[in-house]
Image (cartoon, rainbow, N blue to C red):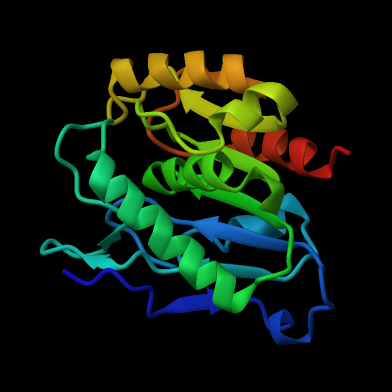
Length: 207
């Protein structure tokens, strides 16, 4: 099983970015790829350089994953640690000094939460779109509970992919460790719609 990030997409101006300039990081969901999320950037009105890595695990049915699914909504702790290390190792090579505006969908949202729970000082913004958090303690949880950064979390009331236990766990964690902007969208399934993008745009534009 491949555990290295070998493919990614970037904005045309990525290599021309200034030192310490914020970078938007896009993390796709289970079974998707690095071209999935960049189209939302025009809607969000972001002008920062961006990068979108392809998750390292190729799936038999097509697409890619950050970690295998064993128990839905509860990734194995060892798989979680491996995926988090893989992503940070890649980021340390390509954007070692840039504050990250991290946006992830589904399992990509889970990975955003892992970045936040391991090195919160690197995360300028964190958005979990139909995402969730791990149930096991992470290295920076105590720091988060003290600093309570603003985090955007969107989830649909008709989402049948993220199990209820994961939703409840995520709500409890984010409320106790962050200043969560909790957005539940009536009738929305496991998806992103205009309501999500409008609220996400406001969050990203906030101080």
